[in-house]
Every structure is written in structure tokens, then in C-alpha cells.
Image 1 (tube, rainbow, N blue to C red):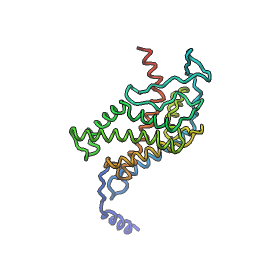
Image 2: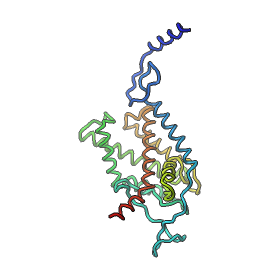
Image 3: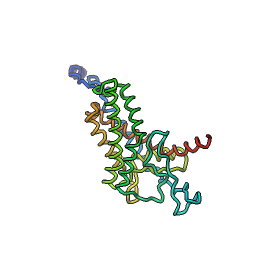
Image 4: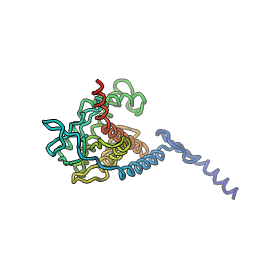
Length: 275
């Protein structure tokens, strides 16, 4: 038995080592190179299960309480919710946030594409793309783009293109086709932990045009399609491992954005009161 094990081990050691040029991951076995895909796949599945569990436990937002009319504060049916800040931190576009869910009023496909265009073509979107492109160039994340001014223009164009494509797919195209609402409805009340869990859960749960809730197919399909399209200009998205990392980055960015959308109005009010 020992001799057979030794022969099997020697045979494995003689196997050729595959050459993988992607980012480092985990080492699966003695003769393998470092395979990035497995770690990314495990992390993505684990996060999806966790967020799905959170989504099943979080409560829907309560009816709007912070509403205004021409006469001041009101909770009547004629009152309208306070408008949300159009930018977060003064830069990030914030056109798809609603202050509350109840009473729910669906929006048309035209309004969904309007939200997508406002998010995509806001001046803040250019600033974010400029920053993202600069960071990507400093890290030399896509070597074919090169360096200096020409290289930066490519990084900027790819970052902004990713932003525009993602906005239109996740807020316009798929929500219209699947009859889902692309807006983020703030919870606005409760403990910080419950609101944090709610914001995270909205990555995988969303409102439907019929008034119910469902799995956020619009976000998942939109993010996946964005990564697939980006493989045309991002060389590191042209394999399964790179695509998994790209999808994880898309969903992680959405998670962070939801948290900011949930808490930023409260923080901005506190800052304004101090000044």
C-alpha cells in the first residue's frame, strides 16, 4: 500500500504545471499553480447565501413619516416624501433613492430609463470615472492600456463605459423587461444594525411593479451582463476567474452604495445642523 502511494505521488509530481497569469488565489494541490477562480467562487457563493439569509429576515420599510406639504410637515395622503439628496458626499449620483416604500407607487419604463440616464450622465459620474481610472492606472490593472496620457484616457473611457452600461442595464433595461423597480427604498427607522442588514439585503431583493418583493434578477443579470461586455476591453475579464472577481466587485459596490443611500441623508442633516 505504501509503495503504491509513493508511486502515485511521484506520478503527480511529474505532471506539467499550468501557467496562469491571473491574480493570486489559493493553492489547491502540490502540482497546481495558484488558481484564482476557486477562492472567488467560494467567496461569491458564501456572500450570496449570507445576503439571501439576511434578505429573508429583514422587514420592509415602514410608511413614510417625514413628508411635507405646502403647510409644513404632514402624514396625510396628500403629503409627498422629502426629496433625497441628489449626490452622496457631493460626488456620487443618487437619483434612484426613494425615502420610503409605503405607500408604494410603481414607475413606468420611461421613468426607469430616466433614472438610468440621470445616474449615467451626471457630472459626478465623470468625476468617479476619472478617479477610478486613475487608481486603475496606478495599479496597472490592465497592462494593454499602457501608461501616460494615452493610457489614462483608455482607463477613464473603460471606467466610464462600465458605469454607463451598468446603469442602463440594472436601472433601465432589465427592470423594464422583468417588471422590477430599480429604486432603493430607504428604511429610515430602526436600529443601525437592522438598517444595515436591510441595505445589504437589497442587493438580492427588490420591489416588483405589482407591489411585492422578489429576487433582484435585474441587479444580478445587469451586473453579469456588464462584466461580460467589459471583457471586450478588460483583458482580465476574459476567463471565468476574472469574471467572478468582476461580478463580486459589481455586487460589492452596490452593497456599499446601498449603505450610503440608507445613512447619508441622516448624516448630511447632522452635518448641516452643526454648521
